[in-house]
Length: 160
View (tube, rainbow, N blue to C red):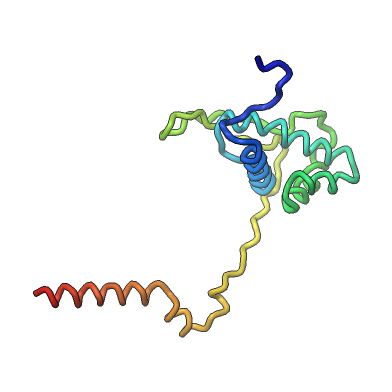
């Protein structure tokens, strides 16, 4: 019997669920909407709404949010919360979009009710950009590919 047991397991362990919800929260805050399965959306919807309510009511919400979500997500929630100051709840909506082709799972779009400006994630600087062009040429995949082709050609010509 599941008396007084709250939440959905989603066939994951506790740590896997926490990681899933953190990544969904980050995607939701960065993009304003996410495409996911209906079960994940229903399980996650309450979590994101609780975080927004805490950010909306408390001035010291940043400390609480940083314990529960990544810092970039916490900043985004603090930025989003004032948009919902007049709303008592129901910050998200679920739009059904049909089933996924592979496994026929019901898919939905989970989005904020208010229009959220999307934030592009920071692009990490690549280590190859600091290399010189000659170093790029010698370290690149193209050289390995050419050497492989030459080796194959040599072995074929030796067999003839």
